[in-house]
Length: 381
Image 1 (cartoon, rainbow, N blue to C red):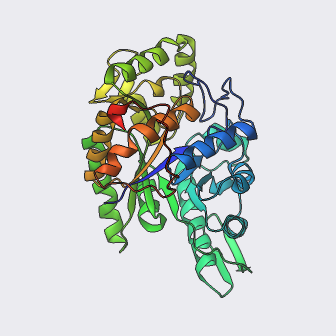
Image 2: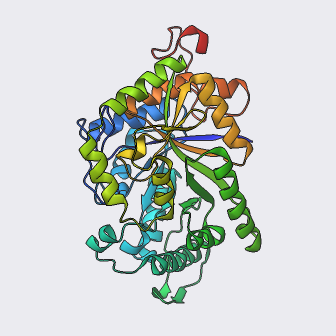
Image 3: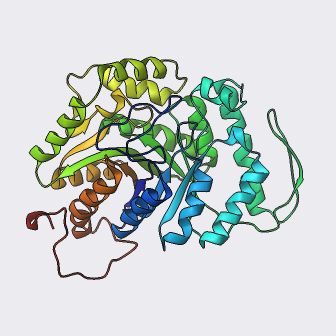
């Protein structure tokens, strides 16, 4: 199985420490998310062979559509995995925006559809549906969008939450952007099986991830579909395991206990099943955070969403990724603190190992250089 690796654009700012907040709480790093800095991160991702960068969605970060559109002209082949919430935009407008983005970027758009698990944040955008209703609306939204992308005839639709009459796109996207979608509830599983191209899960122990993928596979079979699968997780990878765990220890030492209490209290309100599962991995405690070999739950103490990191030597992290790939993961969406430097640690330390094993091929081959890579020792190159 050929593996695809994607990086992350920190559109709320970046830092050498963990940034507290997100998913309904304000979030800001001491490196502001200026366009200049995001261009640096995007360039690092492209130079290191990442296929795409994920841009988050929410009140706590910059708008993903606008930000990535500004980065198209400063990158060459890097794709943009744009996260957005279907309850905040009409399906016809979203389909049109995707077509426009795809033409002007020359086919570099991927879409991450996020239903939204925080009712208070959804309400700030004017969305007062409950969780089950939001997932039902997401299904209706994706049905309309897919029909608009694939039909030359006017599209009309009347559902419980959405109504469209005689909608037509003058320019359909070519190629049609793949849809990434995640969720751990029964409602999310049904939507994923019917409409997603890639199902995403956050980083949990291997057996747990395997069981979740089997669940989605079964639902997809019932729909007559076959999906790809992706893992959203952080990474801390260094030349030796000791160096990597020293970084994790430094990040943990820099956490304000008041931030843990504040963030966990906010996340306790979440309606997200995935968020509940993330919280159970650490239970708000700084003890025993290595919950599986090289899998560290410290990030989730102060950050909503993906709350685990793979920590270890380049060889160890590569092996853990291979294990996830054996249960069906083919897309890895990664991040690290700071995102600029960590893109090089992973790109120059882990990806060459996977390339030698013929599990990964650089989609953006860089020209040959005679000088050593700055973040990799001779033993790991």
